[in-house]
Length: 115
Image (cartoon, rainbow, N blue to C red; front, side):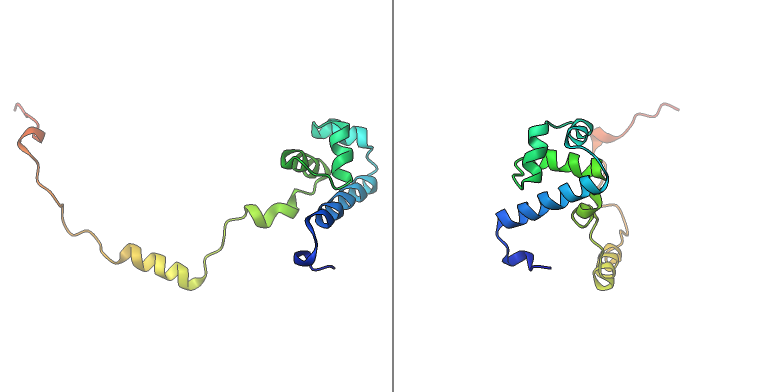
C-alpha cells in the first residue's frame, strides 16, 4: 500500500472514489439505485466515484448505504486511557475529599419553621 502521507489530496480522493465504485459493483448496485437509496443526486455519486468529493455529507450517505461506515470508526471511537492516565484521574479525584462545609448560612437563608 502507498504511504498515504506521501500522496496528494487528489490521489487520495481518486483512490477513495475508485474503491467506492468497486464496492458498488461488487454488490451489484447501479449508480442510479445507490444515489436514490443514499438520498443524493446521480451527478453527485458520479463525481464521488471520479474522486471529486465535495460534500462530506454525501460521502457519509454513500458509505452508510454501501455498509462501509466502519472505515470511519477510528475517528468516532472514544480514546482509551492508558493505565497511568487512569490512575492519575482516579488519584486526582480522591486527593482532596471534602471534610466539612465551606460556608455559613446567612440570616436571609434561614427558613422560618413554625412549630
